[in-house]
Length: 185
Length: 188
Image 1 (cartoon, rainbow over the protein chains, first blue to last red):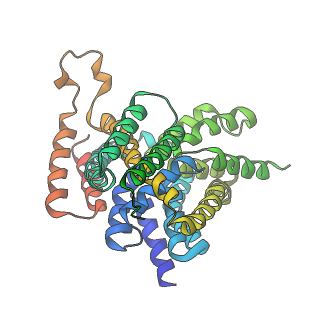
Image 2: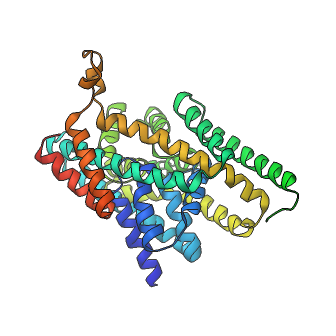
């Protein structure tokens, strides 16, 4: 019971302070899920993000479901998902019924401009950590550079890029284990 | 079929087929607007603005807003649950499969390639956020120098917050709250 409650509260917090979608949630996930509760490792979170690119739905919801499922099965997945959607649900319901031109209020706009800068700061540190963890060898650097360049400069769908990256990773492992002779698995 | 069931069905479909994140729901929501006229494209633009100025995933915000506008509070709940339902089901199935394949060399090989790629995708997303937050691209056309494009107030706040975050390692929530307060006080 305690774990379910922690899951709900923790994902509620992450949902409440995430502005701008799934990727912006990364710093919060690192703090809450990895450092604080040790519910998942950095590697697992990266795997969830990658899977989130090729499965239906919103990435933050998918990540919440994954972490919840890992801890407490289907119930855990549902509880974490409800946690992450609750804050936006409450806030939007209030805004929809009370304030008709919320986005045009000057104070809201000023606060948001500030928050965007905060997101930049948090993303900067989050990416630094992720790079150290995720890009570990020459093959990794090549795949990383290709993914960055293709996702930034072309319109190729991320889904396609994910499939190629997975195939490349598999090919590299095969090549390495054949060259090394003895498989270290 | 009643309009209410149709609403649920449409958001379930959106949740099922919008692959890759909140903004991927927008084409589907445009389609719903065209097909049923539950809301206009202008309403949709307002919804996107509200979604982006409140916390939480854009897709969830959108479904809550649309459901709420049409059927009140419970409409919002129903539309949101319909939206997240498919991904919860799919992810539970994948998470289960992943547990059994955790030690498979094939799966591990695939993830070897996915992890560095994800870092690349996240940087691409971050560049988009950086451009909006730190640069004034509207000014780009009129102003000759690069210095005129940078939002100096935002850049200064960025440097200060980065210093605090590095030195004191506070919870990200603290950084977000400071930034919101500074934004209001200095009229960003």
